[in-house]
Image (cartoon, rainbow, N blue to C red; front, side, top):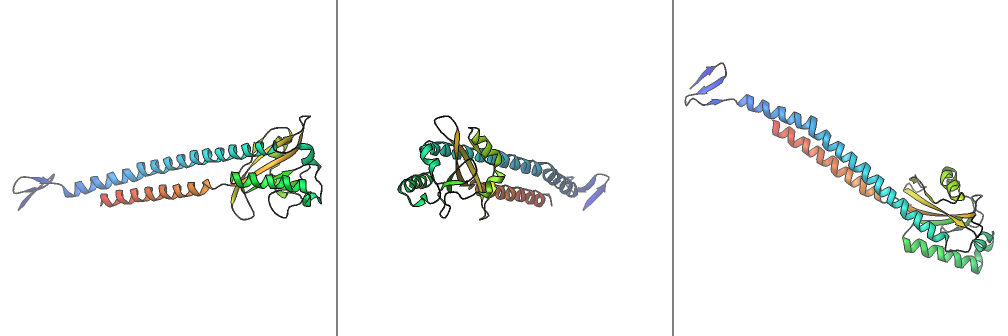
Length: 220
């Protein structure tokens, strides 16, 4: 038997029990956890996402620019800018393009190409792009092109290629003996780090959902 009081139920042994109060406290704690801790975890995940994305993007940009600068010093500016349409079958052009392909493969980039200040191609690792071909993409990379023609290397923002993948480019000027930018080298690489970031985002989201579910489960 138990005796009812104003404070709960007293058992025959005189021990007070408050089952409803205990449940209420657990429920309140779980609500507090969900309201305060889960958003904090989500905010921390977003902050890490931003920092990781910016760091990896910056690192890729530095690498692409470094390869472009090294490539720009590989060729004789006079010979490079002297190529014309129809020279693709010539020995000198073939030697220069073979060097470009070697650099691309050794650095594991997707593409390297060289163009004149007027935007027309001089050389490209992509098959089928001959001397004098135009690059439509340069219209939205105008800032980087102008920086190179002023003698400054630059990295582009991410852009989506025709294949649906995201890429980033490095730009470096080819400087002649008179310190003029007579051509521009462009290096392209896919932004593979985005796959790493997406995987991390999924892990964070799963962790937050599991934490919220556990908190709710303990509260009831």
